[in-house]
Image (tube, rainbow, N blue to C red; front, side, top):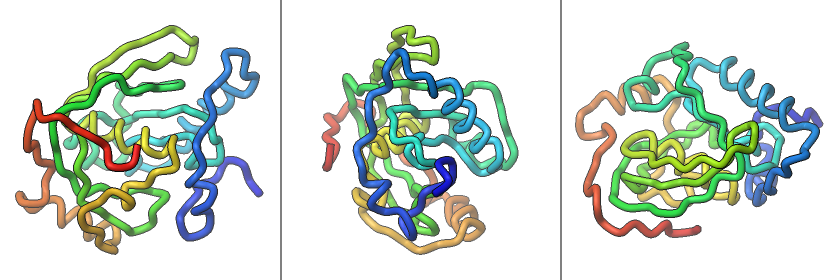
Length: 195
């Protein structure tokens, strides 16, 4: 089996359901793994972010490429706000947002998912420097989606509704104002249903 290929619920659901391992500081494959993740993201103009387990690397690595809803809707936009997060850990979540999420690993399954508006996270960069950052709005949604992958959780597991909808239809669906990213609260206590 090719280590670096996209895992999907159609062929690899059990693989996607595993809990990813912590990355060790002396991991000899780390630099190569990060390059593989970055190259995979660049190969798909619709990719926003990726958890490494999605391409066969069950380690706690998240790669975020596009950081807001506007950028996420543009194809082939490789702006340079990329973030590599190693061993991320959420320290605080609050607020409430809704967004119709999709996922490369979940085929055409799009789900209406409640996420926190704000997430404070501690992680290490590729040189193992400790970082702490607060993500808000759409960026928090992107991070939360990828973070769930590290625990074997898919967006369809926590969605209020799930539709089977091809990519072009999803794009049109999200253009409708009632289906755009929505902020319900910036301060409400948020509790993830499965983590």
